[in-house]
Image (cartoon, rainbow, N blue to C red; front, side, top):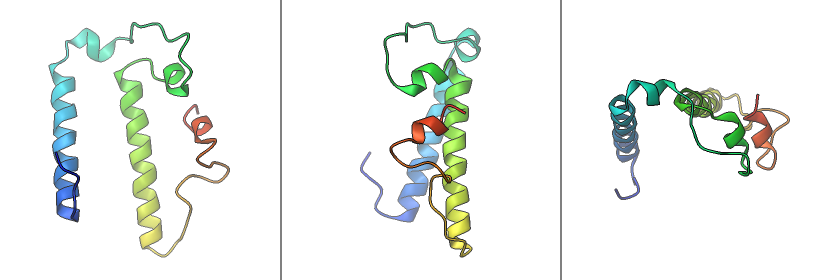
Length: 100
């Protein structure tokens, strides 16, 4: 899929991707949807390997980042200029925010 060039293309791409992930999850067997991931993460360095133990964890993580984005847009459009990341975080330490 080509990169969206207009607002409508971006909305359409977002809706299409959302439908794909919903379909993918709904096609998983119940134990895969509700169970824990079963691979060894002990040698992996990313913070998300320690945080995300199942599909629910991944989805709530995505939801929180989307909420962060929507709150940022809403506040800035209302004239309440703010940084994207919450106070105390920057692009070097935002991984710490993800562990809360």
